[in-house]
Image 1 (cartoon, rainbow, N blue to C red):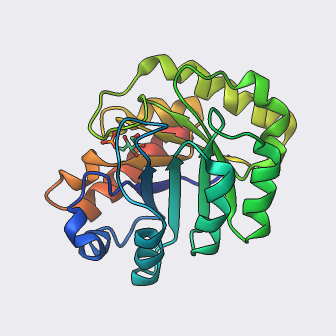
Image 2: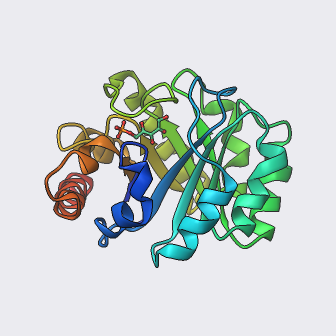
Length: 222
Ligand SMILES: O=C(CO)[C@H](O)[C@H](O)COP(=O)(O)O
């Protein structure tokens, strides 16, 4: 298991003031950017030019989560644009192994996401190709949704498979992560936590990042 990291999602931040919003989370480990294309998910957010500009405006590394129908075509370009981590959905990827290798070849961490109903077991042998596995804890598409407890057993099974294979792959969770739910995720074996509305609805987003991290660290040590 890697060390605990918090990656606030800017999905529910003020998108007209992105650089300013990112400056409010200076103690975060990453900035999580949700790229949605209105095909893979029923929502449209932002794309490559915005991510490229944002990457230049902050010292924080960018964690791009591509909720798009054609990641095989686009994911390497996000790595080239300066993202330190690029996540594609296995449900959308035509050739996930080739894609993970292309992302790594561009110098970024390669990450693969699973929707809540997608099992981990068929992808056990891919874990060594990945720097991070993202287990969605809401249906992708929107921020502010309720955390799905039914995803917790999958987080536990993914952690067990990572231990079995002895891989260093990080285990990220995304969706409904808050002070109420982060401990359950950490106890199940997650080590990287995306939090959108919990961080950006807080009066002091940076303080919320610290509080989330402290809770997750305590829970993972139990
Ligand atoms: O990927 C996402 C939605 O598809 C978002 O990253 C996620 O939902 C974060 O927002 P919140 O913490 O409010 O759930």
